[in-house]
Amino acid sequence: MRAEFLRLAHDSGAVVMIEMAFCIPLLVIVGFAGIELANLTMSHTRVSQIGLSAADNASRIAFGSNLSLPRVREIDINEVFTGVEEQARGMNFRTNGRVILSSLERNADGGQWIHWQRCYGDLDIDSAYGPQGTGATGTGFPGMGDAGREVTAAAGTAVMFVEIFYDYQPMVGAEWFGTPRIRSTAAFNIREGRDLSQIYNPAPAAAVSSCD
Image (cartoon, rainbow, N blue to C red; front, side):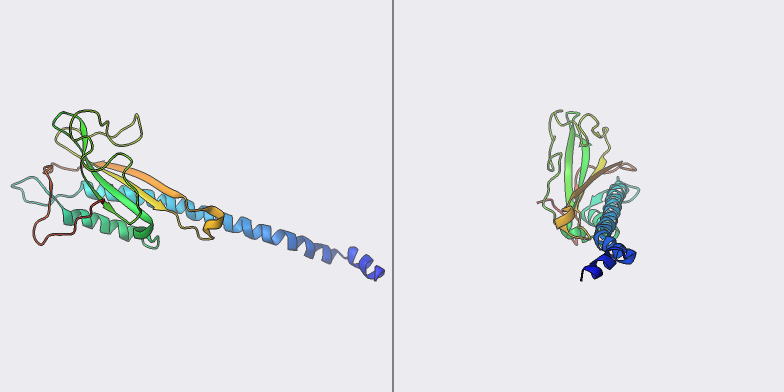
């Protein structure tokens, strides 16, 4: 028996097998971690692109004729959100995400206000800047965006401001990496003059994508 142990101790093949037994699990963990980080980075990029596209598409809404200013209808906003769903295929975004679209305008006192707000997605989260109607009077509301760098709307126009949230779904398992919440914002000034008085909903009425 002692001779067998001595022979095994001097067997380089056995040493390699033992080393592999220790190293392979570590390499597997490192490999999965790399894949997870790459997927998380890609998800950040996709969420940012979805937010930019939503704000851009909302800024282009222009329903009407040459005889009146273009109007925004509920169905137009729903089509913007349909675009979000198409871009977010494979992410289960409706369940794990939310897009908040706000129309940032100037109120009668010259201040900023959120005239209307519409949402898409089941994630239970509110706008970081307040609900629809925030800043309706006065000049106390500074606008939307990071403190000190707020986006503001000029008189007679509006900014389509999008906040997008997504609870990342890990490939490996939430036990290892958790479910980090991805957040991004985007803003586009409307591309042409627009009837800012209200959101229209002519017959047949479309569903209202409220934030309630």
